[in-house]
Length: 319
Image (cartoon, rainbow, N blue to C red; front, side, top):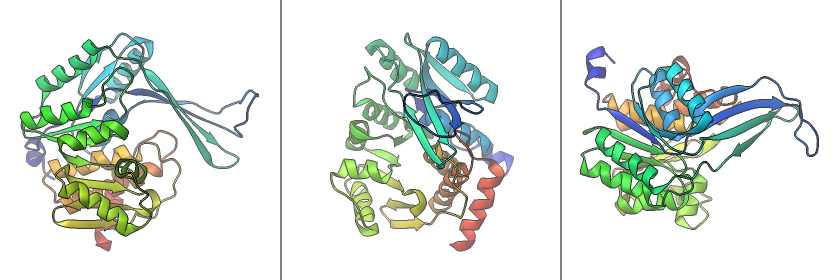
């Protein structure tokens, strides 16, 4: 991709209303009622949209990150993002930004993830997020709304984001679960990226076969809820449903160390490649490659560009 095409790429904005200061460490064995002596600690600025933007930057692109943060952890979060050089728009909130904890149990290889619910936002704070989004809207580009909704934010928040994006000529991508996902789908979006569990919860049925999974994803497209549905299936690969049909991809062979951030990496690479003018099939391969590359890194570390490009080439050779 040459420099001129990067300059002319449609802009990307990510929205993270419930970011988290991700703390990760390890201990030999997790057990109750004992002090657990831990290894070294890693701290990263987490949360869906911010992770997506971080991956886009690592792959040579640029995304503007709009996020809400406050309190001492919010200030630490802001400093970590600034150190990575991400372009950002901060919406200050009164309560303190949440933390999330990941603990690797070295004796068994198990990973324990503790995800806090986050601060409660007032109506004034979450409406300020929407107003700021409207003022920052990337016309002709992509709005990626990703992550959980904190207390105080209505279930239709992402539906409102989708409405704003459509009104302002941007394509809305949503990565959420539960009522927040259902609300966005009812409004209609460009792309959703559910996990199998999230799609099953929305559909209200178990999707135990590849055929039932493809049918559920295709049904969302047929109903007008989404133009594209990217269903990520962990070690079973991924599928992409659109009005032209369903395409599938296996995952490349990597040693899985931690799946934290893999879904965000998929989304970042997928949207970046679309913005760069690649085909949907190429963007889909890039997403699978980025998710796999992140799964091969420890704790909350995200993918590296050289690994993603190598895995992209490997997947392209199989196609």
